[in-house]
Image 1 (cartoon, rainbow, N blue to C red):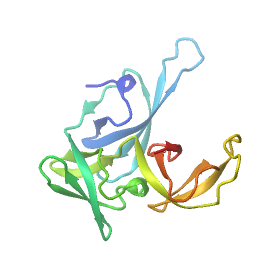
Image 2 (cartoon, helix red, strand yellow):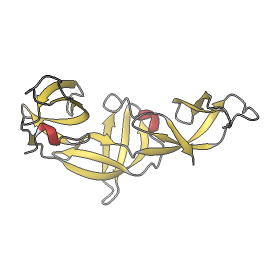
Image 3 (cartoon, rainbow, N blue to C red):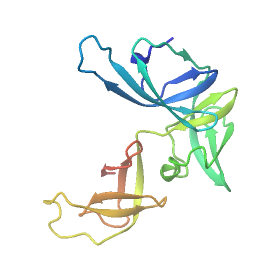
Image 4 (cartoon, rainbow, N blue to C red):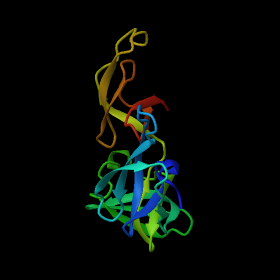
Length: 188
């Protein structure tokens, strides 16, 4: 049974009998003497997708939820459903677009390194790899000498999302994008 002080992003705990994933952990150290450290934690209900913000003491206990972590690969989109395939036994799993709305922009056909969270053999959430390689499909022309300046420009990627990239990058270049922050990391 983990304490609130031991929770990390990606862990799954039970709150009122329902599995919740830890999304953010913020540590607050009060300045007054004798005050205990507070942990502001954002949970996501894995069944409904609702967010839950809690302020907890470091000693508050949680029960770990019964779930399995399975490596999957993104296969294809079928209407509003996104189909993932188990990398070991090729079992297909389906998730609704509403369940993964903030992750859709990083899904490229054949993307590997995705972890599916299963409760009772049903996928309730996915975890994307830390970074994804994507192709720039539309951006302003590159500017000579732009490497010296730290300025950026908007680039549209092959899934439709837009990120800020350095001015020296051009259309059809492959780049690495951080899936947590949605920011440009490097050329691929």
